Image (tube, rainbow, N blue to C red):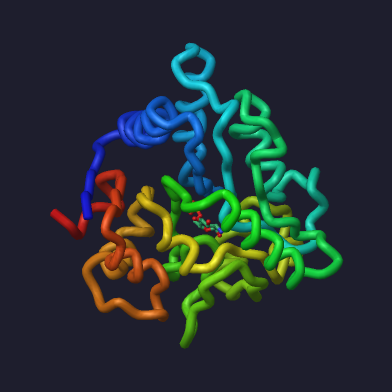
Length: 242
Ligand code: GLP
């Protein structure tokens, strides 16, 4: 596990973007696992800047997002499809057919999950999986539970997760109750995992996840078992490691 702490967000974002664009420069056919939430926005901004400077291209790259809300129209401001369009896909040359996100409006959610796993299997191993961290230790939308599911599945969001994400919606009632998420098995199969954590409010959970017991009560704790985990933190989130 390689832990890196940064004293400014600018340095953290540049480093995160540099790891991702470096991979695509050396392997244009890379398969990237992408994340949403507030945390990676600055990293996507830096990736777009690199693309605009002409130092990286995404024509041959394939991406798989971790998760999507159930029941939000694709063009809803807070759908993860819209998030990805706004922060990355609209600004780079990644062909849309190669940019995969689970369809939260599929009539048959189980079939959509099986289809997503099929696409993942066809793409081969994810080369790099970008991850944020939920306040309760969730990764993707894999919530703390007595057991975790390996493949893509439908999940009922925990109250604390809906509350945390309510800041992006007009009211708590508008936050969807369910989501589709890649499972922890798929996440852990990635060749490299890039976990990004920012803010004092994540200091305890990231410390517990990376140094505490490995338990399904804290899904991110399973990342301790990964052979190639890189963690980027700001100094607030990394406070307990010093
Ligand atoms: C969300 C997403 C996760 C994200 C996490 C943290 O619910 N499903 O993929 O990593 O919660 O979000 P944020 O970066 O906004 O704190």
